[in-house]
Length: 112
Image 1 (cartoon, helix red, strand yellow):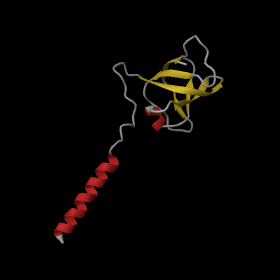
Image 2: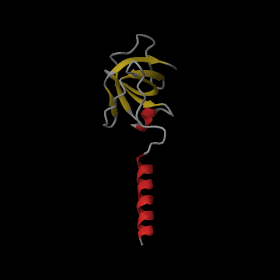
Image 3: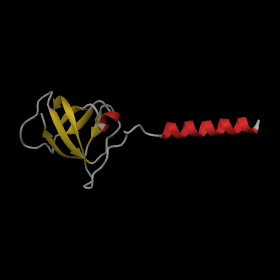
Image 4: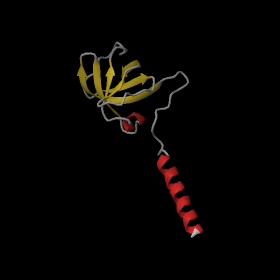
């Protein structure tokens, strides 16, 4: 009886540890300057912000499939269009709403 109880407790502990682990993704990695850079496709352009979708494989895609980004730190040229890929540098914080929000944006530039 004690061996069965010990086996059940051991298996429960192992399952609990496995459930708490990550599968290579989760939080974006902040670099030495305290910033994170990722790429995203422009879905919509609004007055003051873009609605974007992180590209496939992006850690940010684990947080949300749609994110709004303030355009106040957009590089001057070229002007993005719907479908363009942007490179966005931010502080690593994503507000958990829908769509999600990145408020501390340091730079935005068109990649494609």
